[in-house]
Length: 109
Image 1 (cartoon, rainbow, N blue to C red):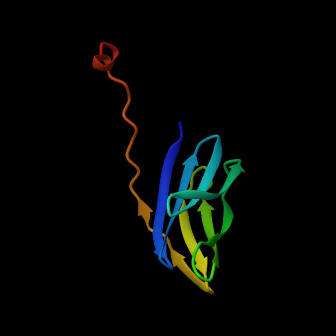
Image 2 (cartoon, helix red, strand yellow):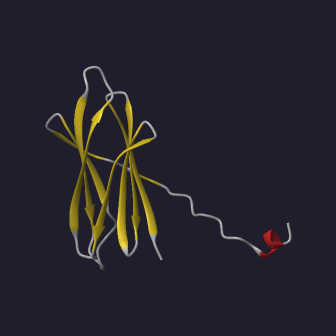
């Protein structure tokens, strides 16, 4: 069973979001203003850090890195940090709505 996490912050007038699906393979995606700009997969259930890099569509363009810390099997929740202009800024977690499962009533509609 996989679990999903989202981290979000605003930087330089852009919306920066990290989506993470924890499962057999850990899938990460980086979105800027709602568009996917980077993605990665991490295999294994050991603690590790994955860095996603992109350039923001600002004038002038600015490069950023997002560091995602993945826990081990018995670890805590993952975390995400925005790295830009020599600063490290934690990205707060956003609640991910659970996907509704089909109910028996849905079978008859």
